Length: 146
Image (cartoon, rainbow, N blue to C red; front, side, top):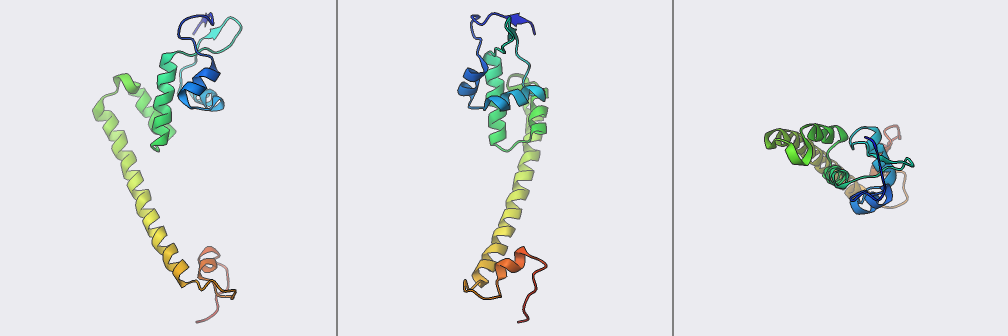
């Protein structure tokens, strides 16, 4: 993109873009480097200036990250046309795949919760060599025979 004057309507410096979007300045630069956010035009002095499109894309990326979408999944959504042009069918496929991953993680967390709850319930809390919690954490820990 070419250079523009800072006075141009809608031109946002990176600090203001950061405040409006709730995204850290370094994260904005990172998204530019990995080509998730289009490179902004620069002023004649070389400063980046952003517009409403950048703000909307950043909000889209931030919200997708909050929902746990990976950078590759977000990249795929952006390739589909971003928030303006993406086909609902294609977006649904990506979201459904992400939902499967979330459900698998929830199942794993439930199993982990049950294991840890059982282990904590077996722990007397006293200062003794037998500690079920340490036993599951340290697989090389010698266990005393029961």
